[in-house]
Image (cartoon, rainbow over all chains, first blue to last red; front, side, top):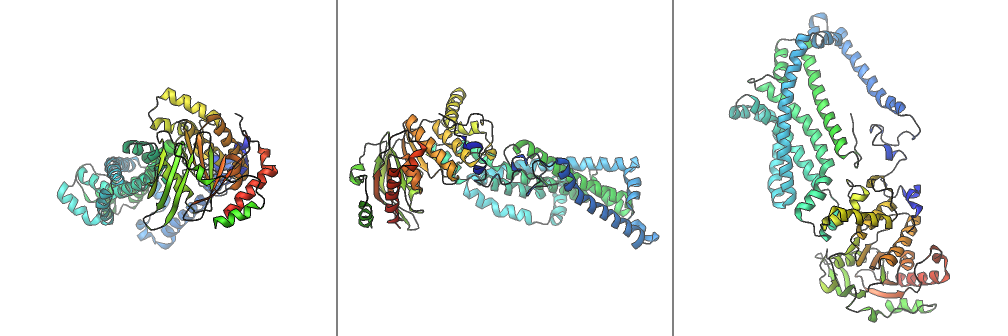
Length: 307
Length: 268
């Protein structure tokens, strides 16, 4: 049997439109920010890195400029405490260890709450979505409640959660679960249903059991969507931890309590530092899950990692 | 309509037209007997289809799009129950090549090729042996560890072929598998398919709307009418195997293709 040399023919490379640009095959390694037509393969990576980093740097500098403008031009010295200039925030919030260590500690407490909440939400979400994918009845039953759960304004039920579960860690974790559950259920369900009909036919033809189909077809097919859901939920669980902490004062104080205290003390520098660090936590969590995603499915899935 | 088509063809018919009645035998590797298919929405897709395929036969069904060709394969494989008639075939190791390569994107070429053997419970040593042989047969050596996304359309189809070959199916169903690849690749894949047909000795049923493809690979070409699909003409293809690419430039090849084309025009 001879090897037919059509395999490497460029003419056949575009057939399914899956290898659209010449750079598509290496796009996994290349930063997905420079996605579309991409630089020609010979172009250096550093050049594309500069092209990717330049716009946000310019915008960032402009925003810091605006910040200074408001601090020094818009606000008179008597009201400058409302928005301290960037270097003050840096000096007082970040570089005074007494302040910064307190913020870090609170942040760590909130991170733990967020991770526990997220972990529980993932378990519940994966389980429910799997059940929903296996029986239309379950899907019909659960779906409206999942949507309702999503529609509840979290602030409306926070008092009730405190009322029922106390004002400690349990209540904080529950806020995290409620706020991060929906995207996991929906994305997982969508992913489980995303396997093509032809693939299902293949498994049907060869008499695969329900479990085999789930394990070898539906779960792997769901992974990209599951990760998309995870990244949304991870960010939400951080918000949930902060919101919960903001209202529940018992137990180890997290970043929410700290925000509340700094706000009431009119401590602008520390307040802004806490806000920046909270956002940083959200970004780190989002990135971490993007990184795990790349590790798990990056080899076979065209992952678009932004940020 | 049938009479008109036959009338046209007889003007320059060097090959005898297959007697449709004699193709209805019930002892082939795959037999359709009076198959009819009407979908719940009232669409009649197939009407009274009867023919059989023996070991050593490669039958291609050509027809206009939407005539129910694929429905016939789904019925043959048991994915769909016909509303009339019956199918006789051993479904234990039925080979089925889909329109798309239907590769699992999270599996490498080798893992994809081993999938069916896995579903049929083969040991890993045996799977390895079967997949190596199948990968050799379709000429994908060296690509075992590639993921589908880095393969060309033609290579994906080869992987799909190899996956089916691991089961050594006595009956091979092809559902327009090369419709999405470019012309050159399609010709290569046609050449390989007829070579596999020769070396593996399966009974083949191939669905396509490409006349060149049909005549090049088959022992017999059946023409299906527009919906409801019926078999309205049949042609024996006299060329011997292995068929060379140059066969496509043979006057006889052109003549036979022309006849099939005429029969096909009569369908719409």
